[in-house]
Length: 239
Image 1 (cartoon, rainbow, N blue to C red):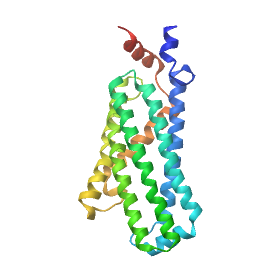
Image 2 (tube, helix red, strand yellow):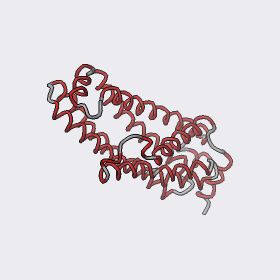
Image 3 (tube, helix red, strand yellow):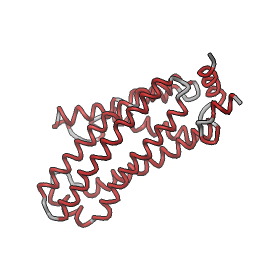
Image 4 (tube, rainbow, N blue to C red):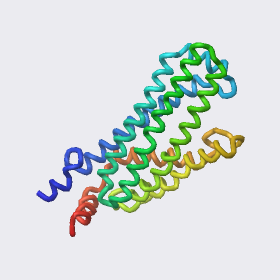
């Protein structure tokens, strides 16, 4: 009976099933975000607003799909974070709440910022090239602001993974180190505009992407050590 109560918040009542569902949700999040990034890289030509504007106007449906994919990514990310909260809560409930709170703070910022993306489309359709450039910049900096939380949530997440005992410690260390990626990107863009915007100019961001991918693949393929998870849960519920 006690075991049923402890596991009632897990999908299927099993930490292994729950972990694999979390990994699958993470893959959906990654796929939707990757699609949006690929479309943006095809349509947006850095330093050439006229070509960018023409590309977007000529590929309106594709650009709309990019906007929708970004929104889907954030909804799925919120669900992913809630699944991780259930899974990692027995390690440290307070830090798990901080992790979830950071995600919840980021989601509305990013989703509201998609309005700037839609303004880009409207401006491109009317061939208002200067406005296209303005709204693209607003969208970019809005994403960077939301990205502060993309980085911050990895610190409590990494700590929980590191201390869990039912997930590899190296994943936790990698996630905490990777949390610097989005923070460094924010500082580069806002304070050192000439530092460049490519991925390889920010090696921390490379670690960020590797750590996030490694976690969701581990959850999907390996799951968790069930005995260690139950041990943690027992410690949490024992007076």
